[in-house]
Image 1: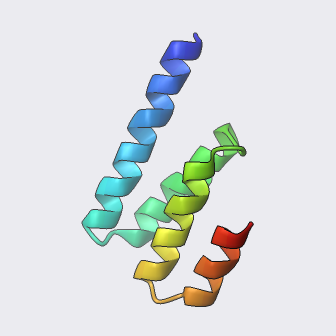
Image 2: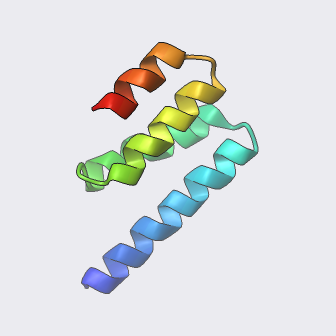
Amino acid sequence: MAESMDSLKLQIKINMKELINQKKYEKAQQLLNQYKQITSDDIEAFSIQGVIYICQGEYLNAQQVIEQ
């Protein structure tokens, strides 16, 4: 069970990164919000959130997320 959950989490993160690379920031944000409901302690999720903010030019929000 834990392995399948880890595999699912990894696939979700890969999908978020692909969406970011395709400049589909809203979809990446939606997926990230869903991901955060599954796990709230994944440091990489904060990094991904920061990247989304930076790509959207929201530098202050990115800084706040990274500093958390």
